[in-house]
Length: 312
Length: 136
Image 1 (cartoon, one colour):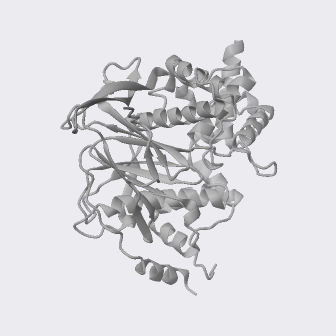
Image 2 (spheres, chains in turn brown, blue):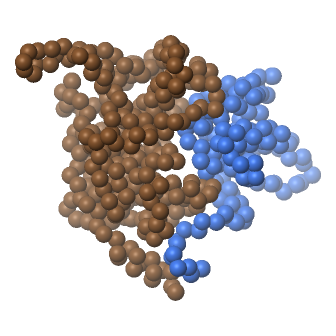
Image 3 (cartoon, rainbow over the protein chains, first blue to last red):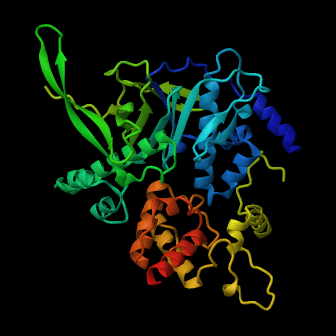
């Protein structure tokens, strides 16, 4: 049997991706796939058809089938996610070109000769062994990071924090007496710091972890709903940078989530200039198996916002 | 090879010759991992654009720290050429590996240098450079 012919037939059988409206400013779309839900060799083969030869090489370089599958799903997720937003005509995920910016951050390369119109999309990818996630915004830089909730560091947690985190962050972690809570807060903090650096897109050496603090800041909300007004305490996640006054840090908004009950996820986006000072990031989350099933999981147990703690 | 699943990916280890081609294509930065023709000079005395290849003992120590961090089975091959990302190291693993190397060798690795560590050999070379600077 001729492999080429077989593959072409397979591609022709691909159902179209469900098209979607672009996110609005200050809105983020998050797509995630669970590798354990993708078992079909046929489907994996279809995904591999979407990749560029260079990406396929990259997948082949990974050691072992699990890592290969993860790398393959990551590329397939990025390509299919971006392709969804072309509502005028069907964008073939295979046609997308990617490049890296000056600092190595991946971005879409739109070219005039491709017969679809450029989209003002920005994206960022993160994966663990059990989840791959892709965040999408319009126009504003985005960084995301996910980690398994059960992740343990090999090194002593506090020693690690002392080496890499800011003094304030070490203090916050050290004062947590329950080791399990301390570990969870460490992982959350790690994802937030990673998401920030990835959003900045200038590489890790440009913003060493020690040079900024991420913390919760108490704010007060006045609630005007009847029967009367009440005051709620809430927490914002903010970043304070020590040595980059040219990059005002109130430009960045953070969301911290628990995803699918198994992961912590942090999203960091640059605030759109047109957005109001207190306008919150709106988030919609989908669980997907590209070409097979998309499920919007916002508002379900699969997405829990950990960032804004509102206490009456 | 025709197969009923029609897999277009080769889920098999790369052949050695392919690996060497890849290394050569990446240019001089990886010359340490390619054996140079002997011209009556000891390899150690060659001063190249990057520092000389690290001692095998250093490479071995790095391999063992990497194995431990990534919980790789003893028989899984880890060599100087092994790329951290290909072994499944994510950013937290890489940072932990760097921390482990700092403790093992008594050095301090700047983020600027750490960013360029892609393979075990890169780490070993950097370690020896930093150890040398420390004792100088």
